Amino acid sequence: MELSTGVREKNLIHGRVLVATFFGGFILLLLLSRLIWLQLIETERFQTASEANRLQTLPVGPARGLISDRNGLVLAENRPNLQLLIIPEEFDDLDRAIAEVRSRIDFSDSDAERFAKNFKSRRRPRDPVVVKDDLSESDTARIAVDLFRFPGLEIKARPTRYYPYGGLTAHSLGYVGRLSLNELKNVDERRYAGTDTIGKLGVEKAYEDILLGQVGVERV
Image (tube, rainbow, N blue to C red):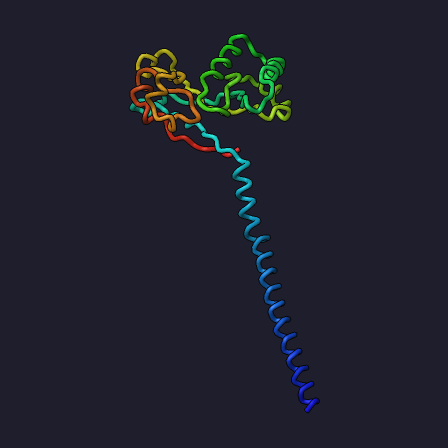
C-alpha cells in the first residue's frame, strides 16, 4: 500500500513537471516570436518612420511650357540657369556666411541687393533663397570646392526663360517676371510652390494657366 502511494506521488510530481515544462516552453516560444517580430518587422517600420522624420520634402518648380508658332518654330523656351541657393536657418551667422561666399565668387553690390530683396520676399521659413543667379563656370567651380563646409548652401540648375528671337517677338509673347505680393494673393500658392515667376504680358500672361506646368517634389 505504501509502495502504491509512493508511486502515485512520484507520477503526480512527474506530471506537474511536465505541465510546468510545457507552459515554460510555450511562454519561451511566445517571447521568441515577439523578439523576431520586433527585429524583422517593427525595426523596418521604425527605420521608415525615422527616415521620414529626417527627410524634408521640398517643392520643385515646374519647367514652363514652350511657345511655338503654327509651323513648330520655338519662340520661347527654357535654358538651364545655375543658381547659388542658401537656407538661412542653417546658419547661426548669416552675414558671415554671405561674406565668405562673396570672397569666393564674383558678387557685386547689385547681387547683394537682389539677395536682400529675395530674402525679404520669401514665402515660407526654410525656403531656399537665391544668393546669385546665372553662375559662371569659374564661380561654380570655386564655390563647389567648399560646399561641404556650408551645409545650407547648394548649387542648382533651374530653367530660365529664353526668347531665341529677342525683341522681334517681344510685343506678342510678352515676358515672365518675379511674382509680386499682390499677384501672390490672387493665385493658388500651391501651384507656384518652387517657382517665383509668372507671365506678365502677352501670350505668357494670357496662357499662364497652361504654361505654368505642374509642381514636383524633392526629398532632401
